[in-house]
Image 1: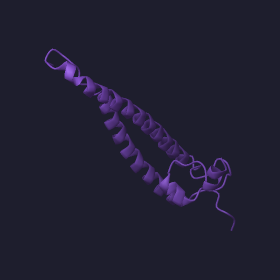
Image 2: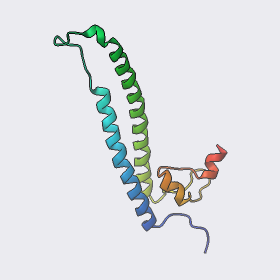
Image 3: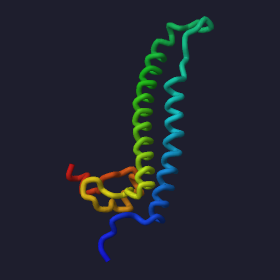
Length: 124
């Protein structure tokens, strides 16, 4: 029997569950970050001490910028996970795009959206 060229449906089912779990958590994290960005404390007529809030506002702006960057990264991660789900449906999941060989299951469990084997990644 030759070398395996793709994962079995059972193995793909296991990876799909891992991806769905990560996707669910990533989506929740993204929503939290999005809320942190859009939540604003403005100086309105009820605010009697706007001058004392200058430092707070500066910190809040910095915090929103950081949350924005994290949200972008999280959104990219979600897109990669969705791409992995498509590869599972196409039965091309787990195949290294450089070598054409199967990516080790340990790597896919750790990085379920991986498209490169460790060897291919190290050669980059």
